[in-house]
Image (cartoon, rainbow, N blue to C red; front, side, top):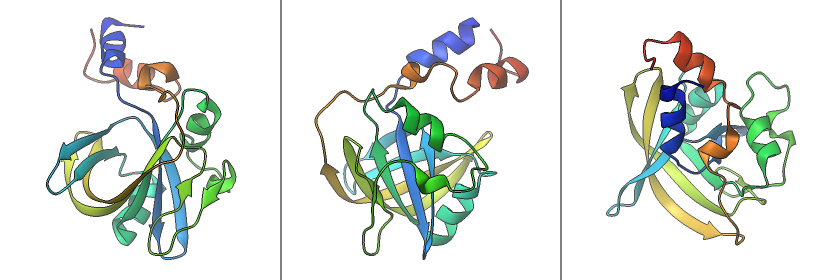
Length: 165
């Protein structure tokens, strides 16, 4: 691992599964770049790859749930981090909600969110969402981005990109 790859892992954030909804269409993806950006109104920002199916669904429907993973849920992080799965929502227990994206029962905490706006951020879009509700479901220790090692292939992306150490 290069110094750039190692240093980026120290910018730790929790790992979440983001479920998105557009009517009856539901999809989910793993995200490590989620952060609060405002208290009033309560806003968070989610970094999402615009070439992934979840982005188009999210943009059309405007609804998502942010589901914070516990350290032991590496299999969920890996599953929802994969592209092109036939039945993406097949892992974990999803709880349907009226007028919202489903929430993952196994998560430590969940946030129901509404798309507010977005901006380009390199190879990702930064989507700002307003928090509509939050629920603590379980006690535990949140999974950190560093816990996932190279699950997301970032070592290859950083190495092949313009940013190298």
